[in-house]
Amino acid sequence: MENPPLELLIKCKGNDRKAHFALYKWCFEDLISICRRYYKQEDDLKSAVNTSFLKVIQSMETIISKYDDLVFYHWMKKLTVNHIIDEFRKNKNYRDTIDIAEEREIIEKYDGAVDDSFELKDSIASIQAAIDSLPAMGKTVFNLYAIEGYKHEEIGALLNISANTSKVHFFRARTKLQQLLKNEKTLMS
Image (cartoon, helix red, strand yellow):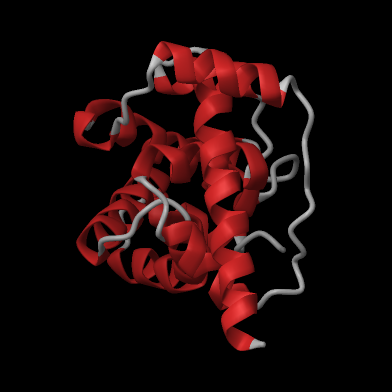
């Protein structure tokens, strides 16, 4: 993806409202796509998109100073995911509790082995609907690990949980997704 024109970013830095709107239109679909992975509620989604865009505008100096070396999309994505993680940390309603015995059992089974057996031949809409049905913590950990590429140690540090707790949430999420997608295939056959 190409960077927006430097002139547009400079106008945004200068608080040009028309430039803000032009940049918003330029990056809206990407912001929605990133935020949709983490939020089920439309109000939360819109709030995350708008707050992330505001952070983009407020951080214009960073992107302008590194314009030639930095890809705008990746910078915006990182800024947005970091905002979502910060919000997630603040909101205790998103946290699930895990029984220590269950954690040990899952970690012993999991033991770092990744089973990517569910096929991506399923429709994108079906997969997104299945991901959206996950509990908030499981959805967040799944997205950070499977989509964003974070390691469990990094996820643990970001969400103030242990790496093992991150693995448990990922294991639960992956298991539920496999079950949901398998059930959908059965219904469609």
